[in-house]
Length: 95
Length: 493
Image (cartoon, rainbow over all chains, first blue to last red; front, side, top):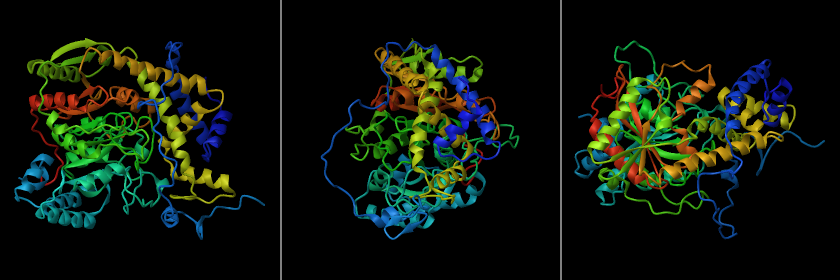
């Protein structure tokens, strides 16, 4: 499978990365190099294998569904690039 | 003796005997940093005043008879660990001047035990790299020089390049680091120090900037195996804030260093014998096995048949998880913001300006392999091969207690080499990445030098949650090797 330019641009859009002039072509070449190398996995017979998603234990621990933290608006907002009162501020999203 | 030459164990004894104070040790390290960091670039943030204040508080605790297990020991912290009130960058522009309001669990554990933090050390951006060249704060210089001193700057390895260079050059007694595909073990090998990636789940990931969550493993680097054991014991432990943190008691790792290897079965995987590997690495590997045999271990040939698929598997799994983890950097809640025409444009311009080339490359690969139509062919396939790699280890550990391999396929290379070829760079992790996929512990122990006088390491792998055997085997290699050379660029040299 090799990526065409249109796919590179679509993936960049999905990843929310603005591409500079010519960056799509450079990425196309680099990604195709890496994907070509990854292709060797297709040679492995995995027909009888269950996928492994993590290296830790298989069951996630459960905890009581209780409020154990909160009331830290100032700490949460302390690193915000822009804020309005107790809210994060962003460009207008509805007309 | 220079105060920066102490091992952690030695410094703890000197502190308890009143020969030195933490303030004096800390000041000596800060002086060394001031003298050498402009050249080495190991630290991105030095917290001199905080460090001296912490050292004086530590000396007071010791005088009051309440010394912790690492009381007064000056350490460097990889700038991937959130430190309350101290800028944390992940060596990326996108985090801007992010100042965490909280402390990571691992660094909180070290503080609880009395450690003193000198500052935050450099790394590859978001821990993605093997030479520290992708840092937004510039490259780190390896304190070792080739024997003929040809003036060539060598890389310290990565991603924990600042941690390894700082410890080797004696700008810290030890450092925290993280290992997602080899980021503790490869820089430790390149800088001639010890480093352990513990079992996944041994150290909490809470407060560590996430790269690939199913692989990321915090661990220590230090100048001796026992020092690593002392640090790991402090860093480890169950943390309810990390759902993958293991609820198991933390063993006395330092005691395990003295166990010896009599009667242990040591596996030697034939798949780690690479074509074109330098002869001296092959020779060092044999030497290591001979040392273990002489101490009573039995050497057994084993097979890990899916080894060659580990790197391509990693370069699907890690970018996939990274693309998901790094979605949070959107210019809204913290970090850098580049304004745009609308919200999507703001996201895109912020991320384009904030991430470096290697991070973008991995986000693109990850987004692609997770996208509709490609998920099964790439991501699901990689998860299945990952299961086979883990099964290889499970079967091997039925017959052996530990596995010994080279740590890296070469000694440290020159700055600028391999930069234009991502896959050549990725191959640095060919011996280390398997342990991350399987979740098992792996340690680099310095074992010798190449013909140019550069350090080479061996890697010891163990069963999940059996770091004790890893420490025992590593200690035997360390004492048999009995290395005495120090890097040319170091404090008070």
